[in-house]
Image (cartoon, rainbow, N blue to C red; front, top):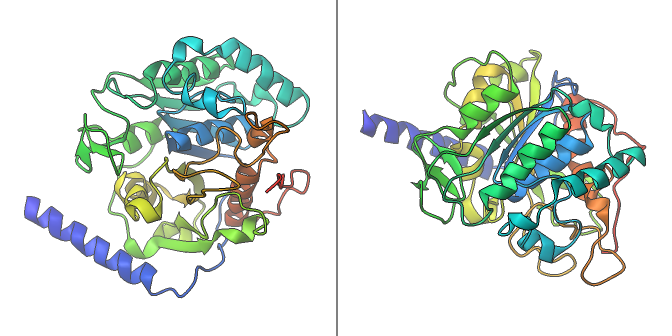
Length: 356
């Protein structure tokens, strides 16, 4: 039985290579029968922080988030030092009430959607007991902040895991820290989180290699400005969605060092989301960041959760615009979502170009 599973997995990988490598360049993102009123997001680590930012800022359309080892909204407050301490290793210095006050100010100014939208939204938060990268106390702050806004929060803090996206049987040993930051924990993060975000999910089925498509990300932002996005993004489109069935949209954000250049398509194909998506008509968008060493400085290829795309006046503090709906990366991702749904871009929230 094990050998059969390995053969099936190898066959999938070969089909995936045939499906993707043959493309001379990424195509434009296609539209499907997808509504934008019931979108959910998820992510690990930096991707978890980005999932929180998207859920809070776009709460009128985004109705749920699954946060793996990610901190509360505006945690870094535009400062890398704060990101590395308060938001990762030192949760004792984290003030959820202070962050909530600033977040309320952003909403009142119209930079993000009304916080009332978060009431009863679905939130799943995960942190491994042995996480040495993002302290579980930080992730508990995420849960507390969402609860403050009336969200329906489900949390998991009792799995003996390191900093990772947990799966049943793929990846590192559960307590080992290291690439690809996906670990075999006998616990499906995809299954448990998506069952919180979506009602009445059918059991997972096999993912289809030919249903994973590349697309050109530069169609969705000003490519003359470096926002640390890679040239190519990915979208998984279930067979039924390609045939015109009504589908929903899920957006999944990778963590630092989980790009195509670092781990291939493992985050996209190995964490278990596509198998659930195929059975439940979920189109899955996988935006991609790439490393950038100067202007902006993003050497680990993380999504922007401390402001590297929106520099401020001082050398050590960035503008808070990186959490606004108009933030370069967030606005680009939402334009991708609108393209998938065949909707027009919201001209009221054009991306902030920043100083780069």
